Length: 101
Image (cartoon, rainbow, N blue to C red):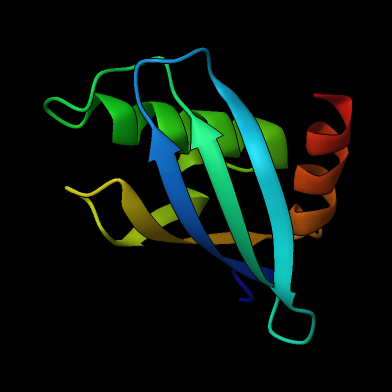
């Protein structure tokens, strides 16, 4: 069974303790679907609160389950690498929400 049709790799820099929103987003490689983003989070970077909010925000924006958003690298850092798997293009959803802000 195919888990997903699309995989987006994102290099993310988080800004904790600010209103939650995507500050900037740009595509780095069109073929491999690699994005770079800066995201503000309201949660404090304590006990994984900021990571939980980041996963919740991206799962809502990309319309995927929280389990489809994975922090690959940087669990305890402001700089993270994430993988988002979906049956639709998650980058398109991220671009739409960025244009609204």
